[in-house]
Amino acid sequence: MSFYTVIITAGGIGKRMNSDLPKQFIEVNDKPILMHTLEKFYHFNPKFQLILTLPRDWRLYWEELIVSHDFKIPHRIVEGGTERYHSIKNTLDYCFGDYILVHDGVRPLVSFKTIETCIEALKDYESVIPVIGLKESLRIQNNDTSKSVDRSLYNIVQTPQCFKKEILQQAYNLPFHEGITDDSTLVEEAGFEIKMVQGNEENIKITRKIDLQLAGLFLK
Image 1 (cartoon, rainbow, N blue to C red):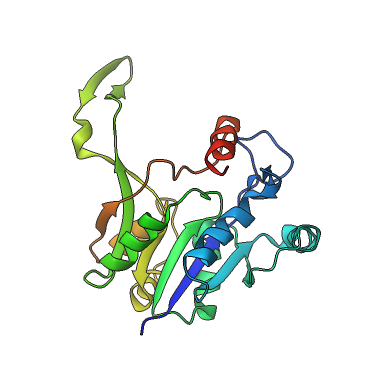
Image 2 (cartoon, rainbow, N blue to C red):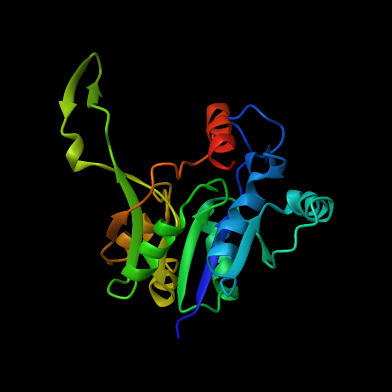
């Protein structure tokens, strides 16, 4: 039997939201976004090991939220680092799963189907990420000119990004650089191929006020 660890990253500070409160703590339907996210994975499989990365300065605030919302879902808290890279690297020593799923704390709308699709693909592939295709037209800009781009060549990357534990560990032996935008970028840089599977369109990353409104509708 395989075991799974889910790392929920919650290191954002809410710049795009123009809020003093980090976006992961903003309430949607009377509950912080981060709690909705943790609940999604717990309800999918209560045997998942859940690890939450948090900035040191906000840990006490989160613990107060746990008490005020009577939040009972078990999870471990690990101190986040300067960048997402450092937060994940700090967490790997605490993961006991054979497979590790890394998910954005502000993506509470990931579907059970997306999680299941990723896990099923891990039976045949070492690295799996959910994506969705583009519907809008694309143009690439070069100074004052632009040119249309074939949108079928591009996908929007979502989370959870899922890996065999040893693959992710090897990847995080590589040094940090500014080009590391997510875990699959680092894993690919370490020499491993990435399998893309279908995600779900509502699995948005909540970064703007309009995203909050959409999340409120879906979470009803």
